[in-house]
Length: 208
Length: 376
Image (cartoon, rainbow over all chains, first blue to last red; front, side, top):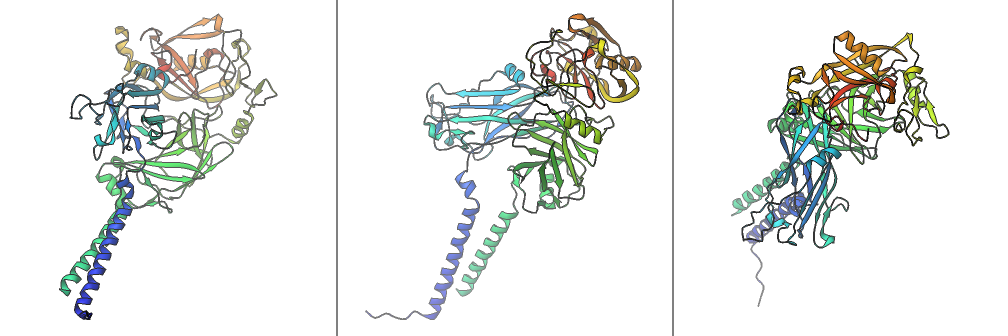
């Protein structure tokens, strides 16, 4: 069978088509590369969201969100965090529910929120907020990435009230001393100490 | 066909360009933004922060120390390109900060410097050529964070601890910069392990932290570097030598515990809890905190009642402004703090030196609500 030479016009079209295809491919690759961190999720980050400035005369309680960016592939039946704060300026009231569900062993709909435990009285005495969640069912009520929303995953909310001693311009840091999301397989746990969990501290800035 | 292909090609090229340039210019204000090498943040970014009323964080590093700027959209009015880069340098006594920006930002910004170690001081002040320019708050349990509210830019400043020889900057008082003698004397504050206690050039004796037991007036060991008590009977006044200190009296903790307060005393509590705003007062060499409190209260017409407690060899402050101990619960009463430290001995035994900051604070919880640590 003899080969018929390609029509120059067809050849040109083919080159242009291939060129466009390559460019399109390059574009996709570039976009992928730039958003790789977002696509891959990166190292999970636990963040105390810094709120807007709070007036020194604010007498109402206010909350600060503690959010997480992502989870690993494991399930996490236990979590704990320890946060330092200035108890001479802030009164820690307690923990409020976030919006991250835990796996629910009582039905198909995952609508159960974790029950965090902490002792505000002790926290105020020590200037350290110690919070813990323990799934006593052995994983049926654990955290897992399937239950995360795309954005704004609030693990819990810290509730405070300003003490009368605050002054305008005061800055109250909320600093993670420790944070862990423990997996049943320890190697998959997320922990500050092993750099498998990043943290971002928060600040409360007191305004007029 | 050729035209269609050209159009497709142009579209793809345009799309690539838009996507790439858009991605570089796009700033996610929810995430910390790493400063570029030149440190310049463009006006557009500040506009975005302002329009979204966001809280943005810009991070940088210098001399292996991380720093971050926190900027509130609500503080931004007129925006411009600003260089947020700073240079940090550890000095013998503190930290030197050099700002790359030469003009004022035009908005307040909060600078946080993360030290890689624990800095064992309660508070600090940034000095520019001997003048106090920023007050610095220090937080952090394992490592220290210096927080500075920057309103005005100086070329460079040095953050120095507010030790006994430096004046804390307070909003309603003039600040006094430490002179050269002060710097020299803070040098002598360092403890010599071969001496039992260290005598400073201000004639005050500082604890070396070696004593383990209580003294004869039931005082627990004084922490290292803090002044040892001076017995009132040993104090000698020199009226030719006068100094100044900053004095304040406040009871704001009561505002959080009004339920506990004796109802008859409610009228006495100022709405902001301040009985005497920070005020610069003069005192004579050798005077104690109690001596100055007595005089200040007399001059300002503030009620004060005290009683002598022989076992502690000191006056005990029962009430100020008619607010007495136990008026706001079983754990309430008056405490004093000097340069951020609550002395563990009576106010008649604390001999003042120039530039100290004395705060009388009402506690409703044995000091826990006013930042006192440790035991009585």
